[in-house]
Length: 439
Image 1 (cartoon, rainbow, N blue to C red):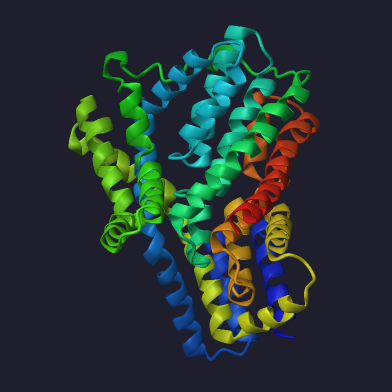
Image 2: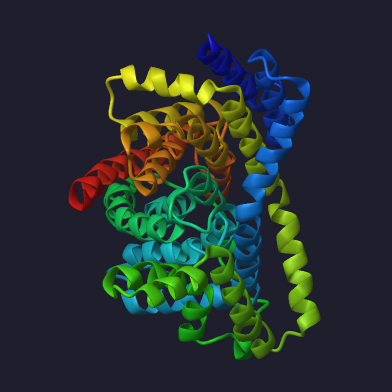
């Protein structure tokens, strides 16, 4: 009976977000309280569980997400993202222009939130299309596939960070595994798939092809400074995760574990960027801090949604429904990774939000780790892949793509929706491939 109650409450959560248009954070809190009441939690225990879940979730990832969004903001305002894009496009040239756009999307997409990366890079697509007289959708899909994969698979993006926290995964290994899965995924879902989209015509205006014209060229950072500064979190997390595996020494392991704590790595990265992309570029500390304040405001709602998901998870744990889920899932004849992907995909199709779909799924599937002894890092990526499935009319990204490229609903489904679905399906396939290789 408790599973039926939980399913009904999740459906109610979906209806609140999609039909009643209630803010996802408020919907999560309402659902957490309702779920606890229906499952018989005492009122005092229920409120404590909601508060504890919210605090536990935000306590471990707030620093990472806030520092990450500040780095992303400075990457854009300093012109570092523009430098990276221009340099890669210069290297690849006309012959491999889509490959250059794809690489640019992947590199720039790691430190930037999806919507910021989208708005920043779409003018680059239009500029290249205008220069080489190539179809915009044909050029854009590889780059946007890269952004999507970074958003769904790679820390420090909010969804993989939140899912990793729920499933107690190693952030560094999630990043390493995510990159290994992301590369073949974007090659297939972005580069190869876009070959089928040459006939889709975009009537978007070429007046918006200028990129960051307001930035003083003399103040732009070098390519090496741009890469090292914006991607320092990636380098730091990767190195501190791999060194202990190669150098078997207890002292080295302790040092890497301390420095490699995601919050510490992100703080070090923020301090480096503050100097290299801020002060060194001629900005005052006050101006840099003002930019950080704007960035934090932009991410506040996402943090609250993640905290709300933590409340629902804690209510499930306190009520004992998690153990009931364990007993039920043992009887389900489907591989846990595929189950995680399928559940995330269904919720994503229903509510449109990849972040909310991933967090809801992770909270429900947490008991799987104890039952099957699964690799939590791969389970994070399975959920992340599912959360990207079939973007359609209830996803803001669908409409951003349609309006920016000014194409029909039909063509948006043929290009954007199919690309997102391919990313999801190919992603779970390579989760199984990686699982076979490392286990």
